[in-house]
Image 1: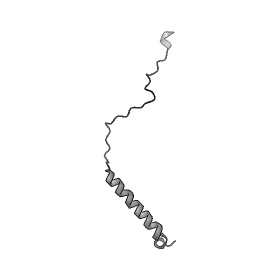
Image 2: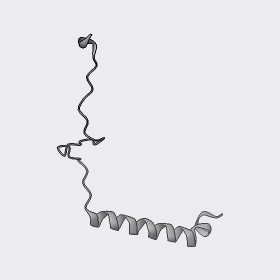
Image 3: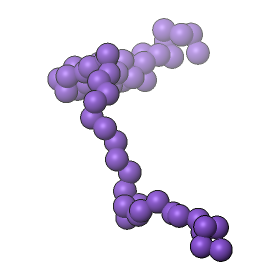
Image 4: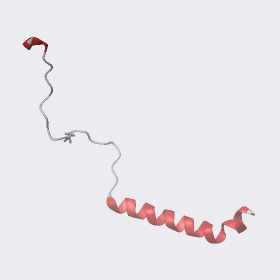
Length: 57
């Protein structure tokens, strides 16, 4: 009967370990992300102001 027991893995308090060995091939610097956000904001503002005239709506 003692051989039929199921052993549960030792608990880690619900923590999951992720290893830092994975390196992405695409790396963005923080300055590039900020610049991209500013460009998107400028395009959206331009389209909001002049979009109806340009697209003929």
